[in-house]
Image 1 (spheres, rainbow, N blue to C red):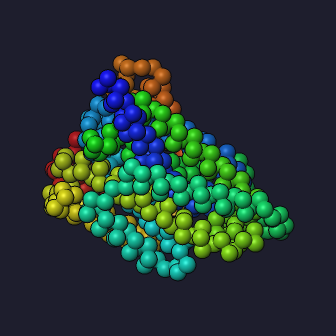
Image 2: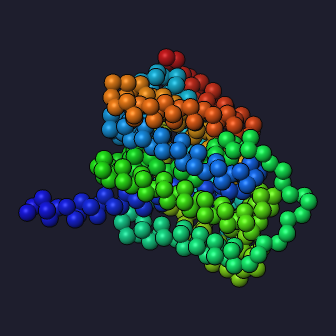
Image 3: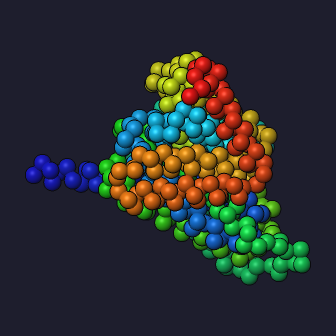
Length: 412
């Protein structure tokens, strides 16, 4: 009887994995990512969405295996360092940290783009307020997570209905000319929409860990829902705006509403989109902190960053990441931050999949093959990204090992 009474509570706890993970994935990728993807591939971006989902699913499987073998913060980084060596570990850490900083900048810029008043300073302030909330120990869980998650499909439903309620304006001769060659770059950009799965597959804290059945079912729901929502929104805004106008839209959903003669809904949709992205911003900071704590424990960051607030949160570490993200949000557009974040994290997960491949060498064949597929997809998509994003990623890949070597006096 005791086991039976525990079952409903366990099922309720495991069900919490869905909003916890899905809430971390749906954000700027849905509300902003379609615009830079359209600039790279036009309407062909729709084919890039399932490719990005497959790459992210491989990465999720690899990080789940790494989390079992290496408990605690930064499981993927720890596995890479243990299985591949110090330098690959530092490259993976550098790209992951910059990727999460860029993700925070993109999310903050996305929230600002959907607000009535537009200013880069608003994005910077949003990042710093998120740091304060994280330092205070704010965690969105349980019923609040489900309620917050519901904002995204509600906003999506409004926009989709408006897009199909009125015929789109004719597209002029200046329509964007694109080819299928842009699909890998669009897939790499849309990879950003799937980030956040590590909150379920590789949590930094044991209290956030879910059993394998819950993790497996949550992953299926998360990736299926994300692909479906992205495709529905993509088809709808392309129908209403066309690829050329979509590529130039800083806030695609608001632009689609205006084009569909539903401008009266822009305030409601803008507020809903901004609110829906706030927990994702907090989740990006948590992922930054997770890897940074693992790097700190290896001595590759100054011990100064290990200072803790009353609740045990590393406030200087959070503040450092927040200041970097705030500065980036002021300097670059959200679309540029999205491509930089996606490129950095693709490189990071290429190493993560390689580490998982070595970890699973004597284990299940299909999981090892999925890790191999993840390596190939991540490398191809990263190499297809815009040149500025690749240069920023290269900088992180070089600076990570250099700074770690200088601080520890160890180069291998």
